[in-house]
Image 1 (cartoon, rainbow, N blue to C red):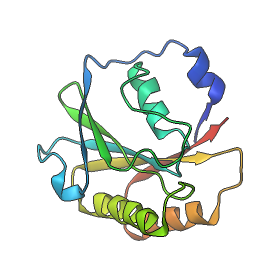
Image 2 (cartoon, rainbow, N blue to C red):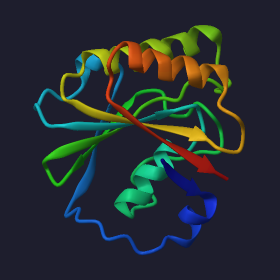
Image 3 (tube, rainbow, N blue to C red):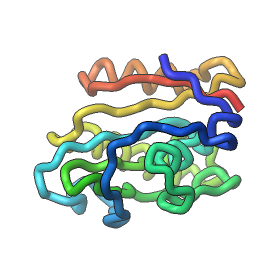
Amino acid sequence: MLTLTRKTFQTRPKLIMFFKSYRFIGSFPSAQDCPQTGLPEFAFGGRSNVGKSSLINYLTNNRHLARTSQTPGKTQLLNYYLVDERWYLVDLPGYGFAKVSKEKRHQFQQLIRDYLIQRSTLQCLFLLIDARIPPQPIDLRFVNWLGEHRIPFASGVYQG
């Protein structure tokens, strides 16, 4: 299991990344609207404000590629980043804590589920879990749902 700390993001140790290029492609309101290139996709999911966008910035060594915020729920669409013109990183909306209406929260959940079920090009979901608190019931339900639907995933924890 991968463990990331706030210090990891602040000290920015040298990573040996072999990314030659990366760029923001767009934000999409549904799985059907996402790019239909057939390229592999690696998605980042987890509760609101767990650090999904920050991790994308860290991996690409570009602090401004994915928008980050201290306010939970800012990522509301499926954000696509093309890496080396060969595969995508996908930043999913968070689940759980966002200060939005129940209806909007339900829309986020449906968007995430539709994406995970419908995208045949999804290779793996990287599920981030906040290590500062025990896994919440919503985290456990989501992990079980992933297993029931045979969604390939890897999990890591973030320690702030």
